[in-house]
Amino acid sequence: MALLRAGARSGRSVTVEPAEVGAASRATVPAGDRVHVYRRAGAPCRRCHTAIRSWELGGRAIFACPTCQPR
Image (tube, rainbow, N blue to C red; front, side):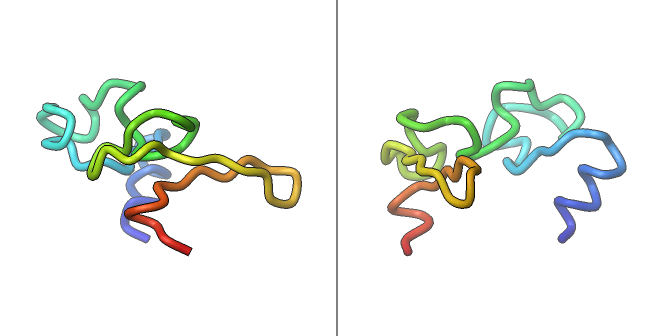
């Protein structure tokens, strides 16, 4: 919930910790590094390096790391 509130205040969604991507604060996280899995199908998970998977659910694309986010 805290990430949703922070995103609403700043106008951007940042789901990574700034230190994980070498940024000083959430405001300085580069656009391509702001999320762990969203729109990153096939790319390595930022935590475990497993390839991120994508599938459709209810007409929307879903993204998840099969290791960090098991069913």
